[in-house]
Image 1 (cartoon, helix red, strand yellow):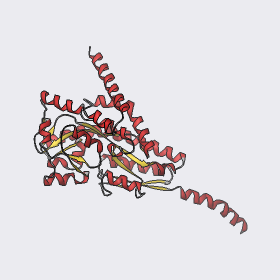
Image 2: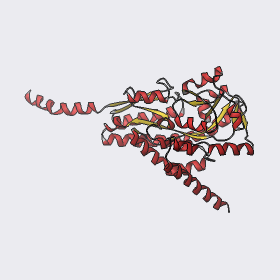
Image 3: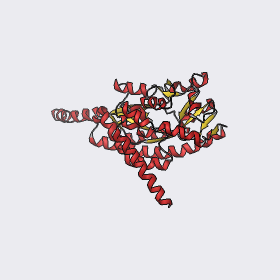
Image 4: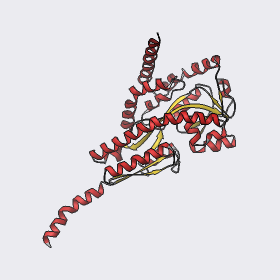
Length: 337
């Protein structure tokens, strides 16, 4: 009997320690069930649970049931959630330079995006982590296009519209001011209703976003010029993540890092398909005349300075982006000669 009790006393702390290490991460997102994001995230969560003998589990709250990105980040701060799949710009408070990809009309092609991301993704990931969130890579949201109920070809046309911007994205606010537009901030969850009621009539979103959120049912036109580039991340509270063992942290990063690379690739393919779906839905693609495009680009060129002066971006990050684009374009021009 005494021998049995001694064995129990030896094993009990070990058993309790193992139990204490079990963590259930509560992660929220606007992505609806059935989307590529959710399918891949659940795939990763299942593998994470299996690889850690159920020490790590993830409970997802999909479809915006926990609110938009702003609400999710607030719930993370108070401990109600541990993380969220959010648009990169939502984390600007924690690392302003993470918005560098979202400068308007800065990229002319996906090839330019790929070249720049190859150099800057890791810098953004490290910056966000220093700001308080562990991320596992960047997943492309794609090029956002201006979609509206009325034809938009010129900057003056845009000024006549009721333009939506996310209510938690200070960079987009500064950006739209450069075009002398007075926007209407709304949470993403309220955009469809805003389009239905006429509160707003113009949005900027990637094709897959327009379809997933059903905004495409409320617009008639798409300005056929990629306006800005959007990406998403899985952001987990660094303090919670740091409580995991080193091995569990490594497994978490390995699995979700791989999943995000897969989502990154799948989203590009899905955006191409979504563009075709929009055409099939009879949304009219509006070409911007060259003379009008010059005005768009001239106004967009003032945005970096405005954001630097407002403290939303650093000069160093803007300089790095411009250097990378200059290098890429020079290489492309040399290759054509």
